[in-house]
Amino acid sequence: MSIFVSHSFDEKHHFDNVRHALVREGVDVWQPKTIAGLPLADQLRQAVCECEACVFIATPKSLQSVWCHAEVGGFWAHGKRVILFRPDRGIAKATIPPQLVGHVWTETLADVCIAALAARDATASQWPPPEPVAGLRLFQYPGLYPVDLAAGSNQPSLNGTIFASAIDFLLNQRYDRLAAMDLVYLRQDNSGHMPDVVPDSYLSRYAQLVDRYRLTGFIRDFVAEKERVFRNYKRLVYDIGTTLEDVWLEILLHDVRNPIRSIVAARNSQRVSGRREGDSSTRFVVQYVRDQGRHLIAAMDGGGKVAYRKQFARTKKVKATTTPLYDDRYGLVGILCLNIDVETVERLDAEARAEFFENYVRNTGCTPQFELDQ
Image (cartoon, rainbow, N blue to C red):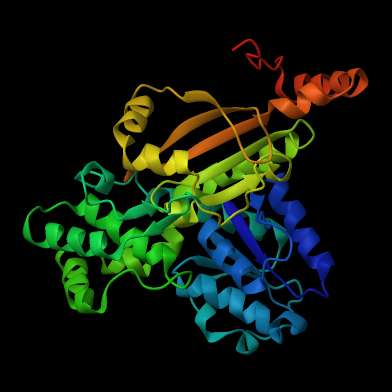
């Protein structure tokens, strides 16, 4: 579990005291895991999605802080537990935000830890494994997957005509909740980043689709649910990527449900493909999902992975491994891609090559095999 600690920026000593106490009890204290420069509002949204509870350090300064009120309000609005810690017992309860009435009040670090552990246990009991959504994936219906690849550039885009056909199909010909979720996902995740894919003449029919498949809650909780699905995979990308940052290996996390803004996490890509978070899928990923999604599912069910060699514009030789990622509720949701720049390694002089192999073996525990004879 993760706990978010809300405090005044001018009172870091209070934060450090709480953090050290929680860490000693085995409680993870949330820290931003995205690239530097992410707006504070986006960091707060991320924290609310990733954390099970919030510890609010109530001091005269934090009670006057607009951001502290926003942080506490965010957790309160999402129905998550807020643990109020008063390091100064002279703080009057009348000065505490009214929405915290009924939440846990603590006055010692020991009580903060007890409350945090209780929040973890309560959260675990409230979140049983989700039931799988019945149905087929949208890409399993021939001619109804509304993603095109532009000739020449191979950039994916949404096809409004096919999107409208998929709406008609799911309203009139086949009831499939999972496929309907995939369709809604494409519109929702690209909202604000590109023109609306739903033609004006189909807005009412799209509303009927949402109503028929009871997807109002899915849309309302879209950001939090997407974060739930990818949370641990993103941590793997960030942590493994940091470990391997000096061995010319990039690690990318793709959201296969939205090839338009596919990459949800990336590390070390500046030396290999140059791709960043928010970028689209490559032609390979789009075609593999659109035309060969059944092979990804077969590999996933068999515990396998897809290993191959490919070429980027920046490099001539890349050895890549693609691993399908599975969610208990939605099935295939992503792929984890590891790409190692073979050509860069080949160009190294003897000293640099020895350093590369030393770093690789130290960080991975095995010797890199490039299959250079193929």
